[in-house]
Length: 337
Ligand code: ADP
Ligand code: MN
Ligand code: MN
Ligand code: MN
Image (cartoon, rainbow, N blue to C red; front, side, top):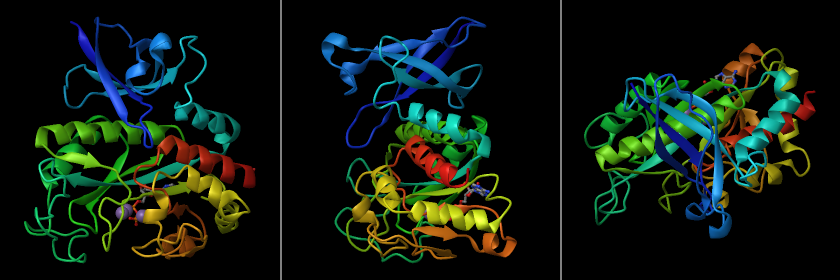
């Protein structure tokens, strides 16, 4: 029997890269090997040097097709097969991992997203010619007036579980039509692999529901919450001592570090990190226990237990999880070495 492998990779779309995929039929027992595609159609190559090489780095069951079919997350390389494309952000996460991987980093990412009605271009729950009632009842809400798109969320969650991704929860968000899923705790490379595959499954299941998924950081201007990707992170020392927790916070606030991190935290970060809607301003840095208006929140249980993890609340929903984990591992890894 033959089977199908859906190869996934990150493209060169600007300003925010997107996931692409195509199908390869494999013989029974055949491993998914190196493959390629036309990079001139993905903003990653010119027509005369168009071949991009795909190297499989993570596979899991394809929960949509079922059977023996699989999903194959890939890294992208030039035709020499060894030079990563500039858009191969996982290669940079690998470098950080090789340097500081022995510190055993764990990540938990909270991926927020917004469901868009393709007919109106408006988020789910927004009437065609106006606005829903102000924010307040929607977060973790229940009921037909408050909640839109739960069927899609349930289906996506089941797919992630059946793909053996480390999905750890879901919730309805503050703005109507906005949702969140969490992946973690997962390793420094694993977190990016799982988030990108979970995003693919989300867009894919959106096709079946005729709902477009947006990871835009501020889909509705005005008094509506933006969409983030809070990044919970720890290493071995942080899971053992509060001094290491504080050292990690200080490292993230050190001279030049907030600016460096914000460049990797997604497009439109100034529009989302305004100081309102549970954010700290993009040009200020702070950390605090239970503080959802800080850049970094130390969860109350962590202050009580005097060990655990921290939450960087700054990354946008449209950030690249490989970029986030590379930044975190390099900054915290160097400080706690
Ligand atoms: P919030 O209260 O901010 O909404 P969530 O429950 O949505 O938090 O997400 C918390 C995330 O933190 C989960 O993905 C969880 O797996 C992750 N997490 C828990 N413990 C750790 C840890 N020690 N290191 C890193 N991440 C962790
Ligand atoms: Mn959350
Ligand atoms: Mn959230
Ligand atoms: Mn959070």
